[in-house]
Amino acid sequence: MPLTTPKAMFERAGREGYAIGAFNVNNMEIIQGIMQAGSEERAPLILQVSAGARKYAGQPYIMKLVEAALMENDLPVVVHLDHGADFDICKACIDGGFTSVMIDGSHLPFEENIAVTRRVADYAHERGVWVEAELGKLAGVEEHVSSEHSVYTDPDEAVEFVRRSGCDSLAVAIGTSHGAYKFKGDARLDFERLEKITSLLPDYPLVLHGASSVPQEFVDMANKYGGRLGGAKGVPEDMLRRAAASGVCKINIDSDIRLAMTANIRRYLAEHPEEFDPRSYLKPAREAVKLMVQHKIRHVLGCSGKA
Image 1 (spheres, rainbow, N blue to C red):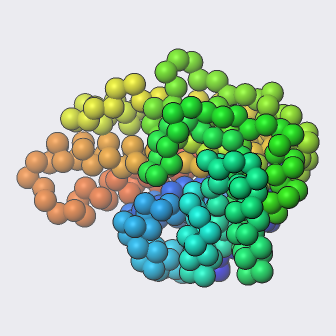
Image 2 (spheres, rainbow, N blue to C red):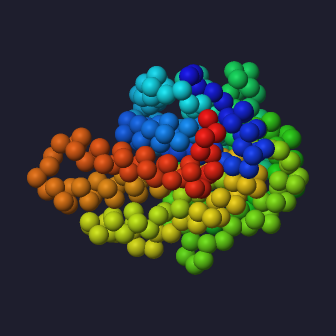
């Protein structure tokens, strides 16, 4: 099946009250694990490529890996640029075969954010590509995206932004955070704000960034075998399921993939100190990604069987 855009995915997700998982990819094993999970669950997938992934693996390599994965699966799959920093990066991804891009102007003044999003939207829409934008600012650190404090999305500004920018979906800030250290105290998402935004933008697809749950089983495993992840804490999965039933059609997951892989690699190498073949420790790491993504699809996103 060829790559698709999120349009039909999000329309159905909005009607039926679930979300699509947007999983960040960096190498072959991650792509394989995600695709295997999606195939077994019969779930639609969004494969996200960040600026760091493009720099690490190279955009042509990633696209060829996705092409190979699509030859073995008949799932609806989107390839999406995560946190595009400017028009040129978005253009390169659009021209390179991505079916969805995010232009992240959240750090810019309101009018400048609208202007750069409008420019990307005009270019993308002429080529049938979906555009995600962001209004508000998430705290935390993820590659080049960094902010010490959150700035929650203003519902009235969201309406004006969508109308004037031409974006197809909007990432909103309601209390999630980038990275593995999301909360110092109790986790809290502003569902009242989310409900206000959805009431003002009915049937419009919203996106939740910084939504990894940071499963403590992986934190504990990593720490047991030499890691130093004290205080890592994510978004409780019941909150994410509630968001998925409340107008959020896309939920981004990155840190959980990294944790699942790294924890299992640490364990394997500690238990097999004589091993030096990368395939030996990447195989259980790939399986850990698959199982984690399956869990998200089935119990958090609610999109199992929706392919």
